Image (tube, rainbow, N blue to C red):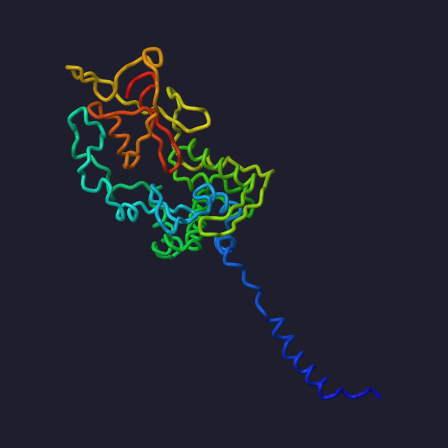
Amino acid sequence: MPRPPTRGALCTLAAAALTLPLLGAAPTPAQPPTARLQQAFAAASAAYDVPRSVLLGVSYLQSRWDTHGGAASVTGGYGPMHLTDARAALAASDHHGEGTEDPRGDDARRPLRPEARASRTDGLPDRLTTLPKAARLTGLSPERLREDPAANVAGGAALLAEAQRRLGEPKSEDPADWYAAVALFSGADDTASAAAYANEVYEVIRAGERRVTDAGQQVVLTARPGLAPDTSALRRAGLRTASAAGTECPRTVSCEWIPAPYEEFGDGDYGNHDLGDRPASQDIRYIVVHDTEGAWEGVLDMVQDPTYVSWQYSLRSTDGHVAQHVKAKDVA
């Protein structure tokens, strides 16, 4: 006959019987705090059916996955997806708020338009208000989208999913099918700028990236070297075609010719620029980079005013689109 278990053995068996169910029901060990942002991308991808690589690629191009402590960028963008809330950013800034500075930055001539200043809240284009739109799509508050990186990533995923829906494209698991939605995410209003943005995102996805963010988060985008996006859907996006004819821009950037008008007013006043023959007539020694502190549409209005000032190029900070106004040989 088998020997009955001793009292000590019975206690051991009882303890094991209690422990095994607990071990089986134990949750997956929590990821380290430095992996929370990576988890946020996975969660947003699952919730909105956007490929994780697309989310990571867009966010990397937008912010390098940094959060900047919830502070706005110079274009009013917040969080790792750089969701824009220009009204909130302007409300927190006093610069140029009272109209006391001459926006021309030119003391040699009397202020022809001393009242000119950047519009604070009126008429902001859609590309500067993506965060409020994300709030409507997700049901999350704008404050949370600005301050919580995980919520911010979810907001970006919701915007991409909405762009895919508007294009009439399926929520595919293949990142190659999201090219046009990524292009629309840029906020560009012309096909060339939108395509340039999407091409950069897909270059990031093909190459892969990894880094530790400004908040100490470890984020990895696995390389997809053979990824070839379907670009055909972009033709149905309804964006305008900007002509590069007449510009002096590299072919690798989206550029259009929006000329500053040349007009002479007499008494040595030549309007907003002077005709020249540089570098034959004089050397070009400096490149001046000026912050306009204004929205794109207002900047174009100013440079096309013959009584105001001019400059050679405007670079739109939200998507990198370039407009040339004065030839390099002339003096702005």
